Image (cartoon, rainbow, N blue to C red; front, side, top):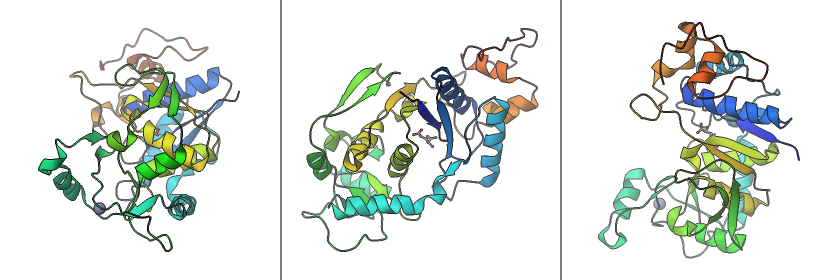
Length: 302
Ligand code: GLU
Ligand code: ZN
């Protein structure tokens, strides 16, 4: 079986140790399996994406020894593809417009009759305020849209599941059944104002179109996999195997943030560290055929 994976950074900040770990791990796993790792740029968030960050990310990845086939896909260049996917779901009565803001959702979800608001993979689980009794008619509107998850699950039929070869936040591994998505995930936003497509919709289209067989990414996205598997089923795509990996934390145990320039790969490069030093800092064994010199230990503990 072929092994196709991808690394999909958002060009909204520097590549830091956490991203480097994810990219190098995916690249190592692909190489070991005789497969391919695609590089994809998740630049749907136009307000935060910058060409300078993209250039720096590519340069840092090359420096780390990561390689990928050209051309590199950019989500900003694939909007018609996402629109077609939305039109498909819309025509099947699975979407509805919703312009609720995060504050509206928080207020609605905190109403006394709702109990404590539930946190889902996409923020607070949407309480269904705008969900219509019947699917809306007419052409696909240019508006923020949500998936009617209840209707989608009825159409998808059967039990949804995926195979995890890494581990979720609670050690979940093996075959993961997906239950109660209506409550745990809710009606997720699939089209947002401005970008036209949400992250969830876009990556499901991208993974299918690139023939991705293995998704390797951080454990923080484990819960979002439920949304991706449901969309795959609706579109008739095969579900890849998932490998969620541990997250790289700073000395105080916090997750690394985009703004955490101290752990940007560019900073380590400026300080004279080598790719082998970086591998060792994130707990990866040396690349095949590379021996690490012990004469220059990393100056920064992770
Ligand atoms: N751009 C996403 C991120 O950096 C990619 C997520 C994914 O791999 O599915 O979080
Ligand atoms: Zn709404």
